[in-house]
Image (cartoon, rainbow, N blue to C red):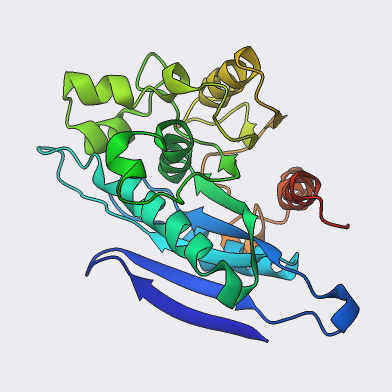
Length: 269
């Protein structure tokens, strides 16, 4: 049985939970990994297509799932930073803090992000030790990230709309938003997937992050599919994609990701 609840950081930021019940056979009962999903859409909204449908698929794979509706703004005159980062830190800290109640593996809490939500997930992975994050949310370091066609850089290959919404052009914040520059040995491992033909967020974003992880000896898995538009989500009709051979091929990203999480967490297949 799945338990669905809503929890609020404030009136605008919400965490939806899809918490699984215990395994039917007592000998198989153990804490499960958890994923916290950050939908995309340029930091101006959170895309429905990258929320509940994905959470339910992760739940079907055996993971507790959560969707974070984080701080966004359609106005680009004032920076959003650091509110989305603190929202993500709150969510990880909150889930890990209730690990005993929900039977969550404390060493198995993963952030999942798409497009701008991928930027948010990766932001926490590289900025989790900043004083303003660590002091407020000491349990907020993710155990890994799953990044789907993520915005990573504020440099040459930036998705300018996302970066403008987050930073409002502030030079210091633009530096902080260039995430490849902040990867280090303590950055959590990552699973990345992108399409070569992404017209909105160039594939170089994932390549820059992967190169930075490799430079610092952080494990990652990277899949670059040869064709596909931006915002594919599950790449199936349920999430607005046609049932084509190419999309069925890309839809395998979630199975590959679930295997990656289980390998990272030492879970049986």
